[in-house]
Image (cartoon, rainbow, N blue to C red):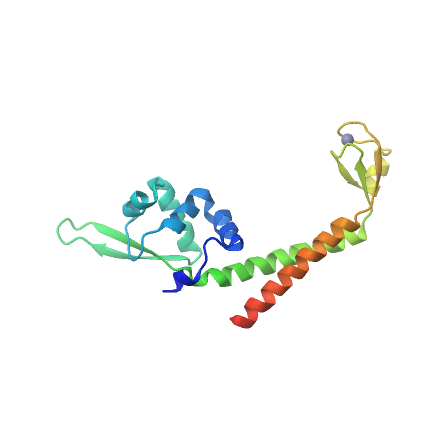
Amino acid sequence: MVNFLVDLNDPVIKGYLINLVGEEGYKVVANMPEGEVTDEKIAQATGVLLNIVRRTLFILYENRLAGYRRERDTDSGWLTYLWKLDLSNLNRQLELEAKKLLKNLKTKLEYEKDKVFYICEKQDGRFLFEIAAEMEFKCRFCGGELVFEDNEPVIDALKQRIEKLEDLTSSSGAAA
Ligand SMILES: [Zn+2]
């Protein structure tokens, strides 16, 4: 069972899942009974409302993190959907997410390196030099003075995040 290899408490995995299915949805994933189960059983076992369970299962299915099998009840003729988690795609999904994020961060880094910013002394606004000049260096929100911002810390923070993500994506790429 691949599910056991996935650490649902890992902050990256947890964050990804919460982003995908919400806090309640995460509860469904974390407390999902083993084997094939109906949505009603899942709602019972997890204490999450049935409609949220259904929504969660649908999102997981769309992202290939859950599958179902239909079974017809021989007496009633009704179809029962039996659900099962399949988190084997999770690492692949995370890798794709990380690559997307990496690209955004790199774009942001170039932007930060390229531009000059002015900030409000009261910290409620941050503006490009061109915009600040147009506003005659008065804050749009409070009227306070705008001062030059040394954005080196922003750039450093971005570089660090990029470096970490690059480590992460290259190591998972090697493992795959
Ligand atoms: Zn201000």
